[in-house]
Length: 179
Image 1 (spheres, helix red, strand yellow):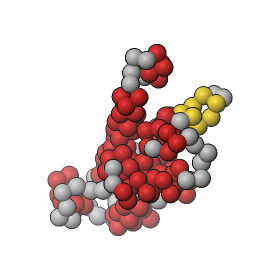
Image 2 (image 1 turned 90 degrees about the vertical axis):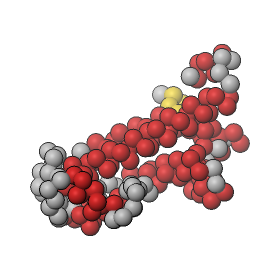
Image 3 (image 1 turned 60 degrees about the vertical axis):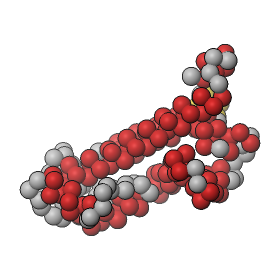
């Protein structure tokens, strides 16, 4: 995509849309992963050792479990990650494995949630949170202080890595810690 953009085959708005869409897809995929892992642990369908993950309730079916977890809501919110931790403390012994993430992992997820919100909601509040808590103290170009530009910005030069790539890699590492 970057090569096509550099050749002039892809407009600026198009490449930014691609980055935003891919980022949203990655975040929603991660949320789906959190939900599926949580449900699988509660149903005893994971390879987690009981000392690492143990349900505090028993239910016979997935549909019954979903009713209990949803508590009258249409869906479960897994991000911000505090939602997941709170739910884990209610239904899993010591909240594990969801409470095993480091503060660095949680901080990274918080930034990713802010970026997601700034892309998905386009609200003044979401943009303010993105500006104050994600990009405020970074030496960035004006174009890089918007979500798409930020995701496209260079995180390091050797090896060359974009912030988008860093966040996607972090999601994979966090998922591996929970497995």
